[in-house]
Image 1 (cartoon, each protein chain N blue to C red):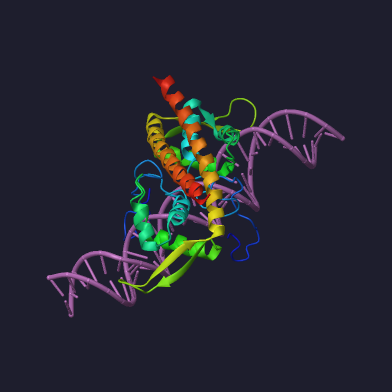
Image 2: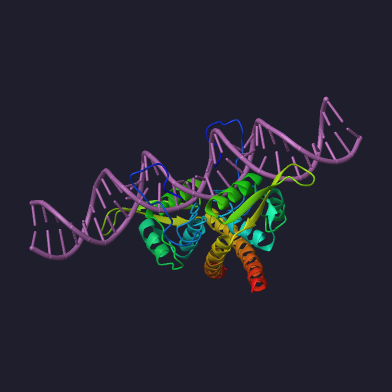
Length: 138
Length: 138
DNA sequence: GCAACTATATGCAAATAGCATATATAAGGG
DNA sequence: CCCTTATATATGCTATTTGCATATAGTTGC
């Protein structure tokens, strides 16, 4: 996969090992996960994109997200009213956008949480059946 | 979302409530899940596409997949050597392709299983932190 | 001045999956 | 016999998310 029509910039794999077996079948690589995770991080503490990306990267569980994804997700959230932002020009470094979660955003996050719970239950169901298959095989 | 440039055939939402909060933010709707689930079903019993689609639909957990997705996934699996297929013209009804999982396919499934385990752990981690956020908020 | 770090943004392309649609066989009813 | 419905598979188009390459700009240290 991924080596289609002689494009000059080669590999476009998923390097995170989070979406599918290594080097194969990427796609919705992080399965939308950065969305709820960003909402969680913003619930815990308001922050700007760069910091959120760092917190996400240090999240463990093989999550390595492109900064682009973080910034774009935050802008989309703002369009949808889930966060607000304002420029910070104060102290050191270049200007940065501080993001804060809104009440709507918290509601959206709670909706996400119930989805995540369902997904986890489904994963457990699949994993149990997988164990059965491999047990019988032995 | 989804209502871009006046296309005649409207909604392209996710109707399964499985990928994200209702009616919003679709994308990798089933988060690649049909892949490992198909492999699991084929580990349990060889079958043709139509039957696999039915088994998938009866899987519970809000999973409703388009038949197209099933057929295309199976063809891809065959290209990758994870399944083999041969036409069955025998008994009643139109000809159908019987799919059987290969040794390679089983290996691929096992790789998937370890990914699913990681994901479930991550989900639990997120859910725990989400509980903390909402506890403090109360 | 220049490299490195902080910080954000845009364009392009790849991958999965849904909808519309086309196909063909077979069974049952009128 | 024709028509509808169920079985069974396949292709084209498009939407959505996301990664990579790249551009930009301020700030700090050498």
